[in-house]
Length: 279
Image 1 (cartoon, rainbow, N blue to C red):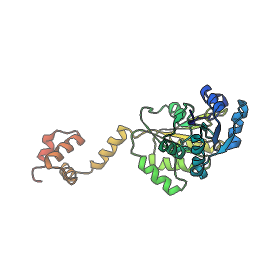
Image 2: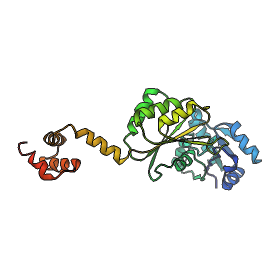
Image 3: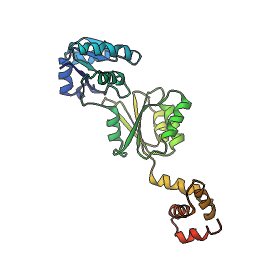
Image 4: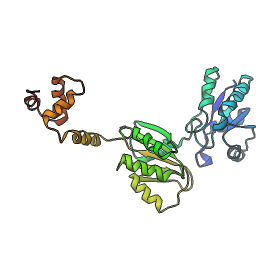
């Protein structure tokens, strides 16, 4: 049946492609790709000859309509990116949405994705994570984006280019402080590397080595210890009475405020109540 196949391609080593992906690329009528030169290298390596159509960020909407027309006319089309899973920080999202709207079957094949490799190799929490992708190129907007995520408790994953990696690490160092970070580059390639420590540690390491390859940054989430330390800092200069008043200012009753203060300060309710009598 004619459909759209989403085919992940190797992120480094050409041998990482799956057998099913190769079979699909051999069977489809057309392959949509970011860069025909990059995709041709992969196809030539595996002796696959298929017509290619350029599908890039700047022409996604127009080419999506061409691809949909071809599928409606009975052809099957494979969408690939230069490396990894199409649609993940790569073109593909618009085409997939349009196919779903037109009731066209979309089959996503499993395969390489740099963010998963980097996450697993980071040694950080893999149970919950947030993938941001590429941050804004503007330095100020980048920092505002990072501010939005600094209090999240799950692991944060970011993509970055070699041209902006130093500024991004500086921003992470400013905003996330001494949070643990793992930076992966050249994943699945000859010079694959994982640099672990703090953002400052990674900056120091990169200053002494050649910056090359695309980077995946994996940042640990905010720990319970960090959260508790911030809570303690927020009240340690307050008297118990002032603390009760501060909690009541949030719109809760005096009784609820007493309970909250006792819980936050880890002290008996009676002690808090005795300070609240004249409030």
